[in-house]
Structure formats: C-alpha cells, structure tokens
Length: 120
Image (cartoon, rainbow, N blue to C red):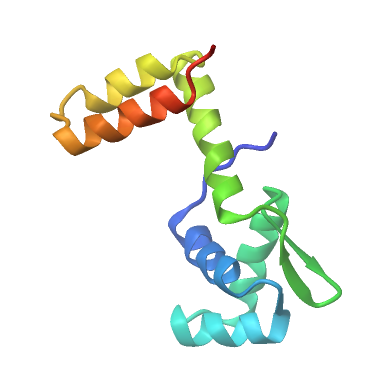
C-alpha cells in the first residue's frame, strides 16, 4: 500500500472531490478556482499526486474516488498504528492519551467500542 499522507493542498482538493465525485474535470477546475484560488495547472498537478497515491482517478475527463473518505482514513490510521506502534492499539491509545485526560463520555465511547469488538 502506498503511503497515505496528504499535504494541506492535497487535502483541500481531496475534500472537494469526495464531496462531488464523480465530477467532470472542467467542473472540478472551476470549483478549485472559486473555492481555493487555484489555476487549472495547479489543480491538475495536485490531482496527479492524489492519483499516484491511489485515492482518485481521472478517467476520460471524469474524476472518480478510488477510495471513499472513510476508507482513506481507515487505511491511513492502520499505517500509523502499524508503522509507529507495532500494530498495538493499546500503545497507540496510551500515546494519544498521554498528555490528555479523557472525559467520562470519551471513556464510555471507548468502552463501547472495545465491548463491540471483543473476541468471544
């Protein structure tokens, strides 16, 4: 799997595409011009980068999402979990919560998640 990290600029374009896909290229160019202030060349450059990452595809002038937003962030999370924490969810959560107290609501949500995924 390709590394799934987006730059700020790539993320701006990705958000537009996920909202509108499938979208004709000319319409995407116009949206990026209005919403981000990009020229046609900038939009195509960013789109090519996202295509190389396997997130979107420009097929015959229509931009398609290869991965949904949810699929993208799930895969990105897996890469972080396995790349930085050896696949250990408890180590990941401990690092995340290290400098932050969890609210009762957050603890309840985590407990529900744990309970729903518990091995029998």
